[in-house]
Image (cartoon, rainbow, N blue to C red):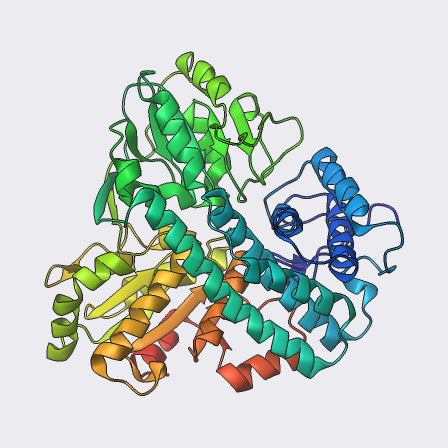
Amino acid sequence: MEGKMFCFQCQEACRNTGCTFAGMCGKKAETANLMDEIIRQLKQIALTRNVDRELGRFIVKSLFMTITNANFDNAVLQKQLDEAVKLAGENPQQLPAGVLACDNEDIRSLRELLTYGLKGIAAYTEHAAVLGKEDDAIYAFCFKALQTAATEEDPGKLLAVILEAGEIAVKTMALLDQANTDTFGNPQVTTVRTGVGNRPGILISGHDLLDLKELLEQTKDAGIDIYTHCEMLPAHSYPELKKYPHLYGNYGNAWHQQNREFASFHGPILMTTNCITPVQDAYKNRIFTTGAAGYPGVPHIADREAGKQKDFSALIELAKSCPSPEKLEDGTITGGFAHAQVFALADKVVEAVKTGAIKRFVVMAGCDGRQKERQYYSDVAENLPKDTVILTAGCAKYRYNKLVTDDIGGIPRVLDAGQCNDCYSLAVIALKLKEIFGAKDINDLPISFDISWYEQKAVAVLLALLHLGFKNIRLGPTLPAFLSPNVAKILVETFDIKGITDPQSDINAMMAGK
């Protein structure tokens, strides 16, 4: 029926079942159906073509465009679809389109779990490729995963490839970590301002650090300050980015508050990746997209040509005519606790654990979202015992990074590793502690996981944690709608994944190692 859709790939799925007329994210049925058709064509490419780097790059960029809150521009999606149809060849295998094309609930659940994990892998692969780091094994897996999601009906074989996706997710995040640190240096502990200056500003959101680097370079003599938003906050900790004095500070909070925060910023806004929400009149004349992001009627900054930078002159000229940002708050946030920096503090951390000053680490990483139920994460953070340390990454941190500001013997109680992909750092830190303490099992360490999820990159992170052997992970605010009861049961019984309950009960259980 015209005007209908079905999507349950994000945590906001209507009634935790699925969106059928319009997405809770704001996408229309036509947009959702275009994305379904893109996925179908990508599966047909994987079934009819041999993998190579050029095709692999096309597939990961296409997958990235279908992530929640990335691209709402039907014209751009149609262009990507037309190219995918050409690449699929003249006689592709005629696969059905759409999630509900698979009647078997459990097979559908496993196929979609694989597909959404693959979307997260694709996003991180694209970020690394932009910085010149590629791995043909990742592209090969993308083909394998698409082939499996298209045709496999054996639950055991599907589950095996899903677990392999966890392994590839680790490989991909490690590659991106290397790309980021080779390009921008190892993150350093950095205090970031949350107030505003008196000069015009440009606000940059999303995840693409190279976009920020080029924007900083093009504005260094323009009399303009650059502010980060949401997942760009960790940029302040990289030496090659923090050296620019006009990288002024961080403005605002998590992605879902952008309607209010973008309106009060007054200057141009650049969305570099996913996390854009439906654009409001208050700022529609000063927002731009680039990369995988897109929105109808919003100017899009074209991809960089080989050997050149993107052209941000339109933002720069607009900024010169805009007033300075309106102040939202006036404080500081400390970040930069990626694995290299934490390893530098290892002796102090180990001593604190041995003396009992630190009783437990609680990993509270992942995504933030709109629902009032997410207050749970603020309540957990505020009420954790004072001898616990929170390890975080991703925009989930905005629920508590301004609430928990004390330390344990000079070790901050919130150690922020960075963006969602920097959950890799948290896993590396945990594995290092396992080595230091000589633990036989990673789950014997005093570490608990209380993860919040929203979109498909979080699915990739979860699969990565499962591959690394972590168990007893709390996942909220709801378990994914795309998990059928039987598939959810498999994850619960095999990996001890569990939903959240109430803050105090979960705190008590985590402190008891449960």
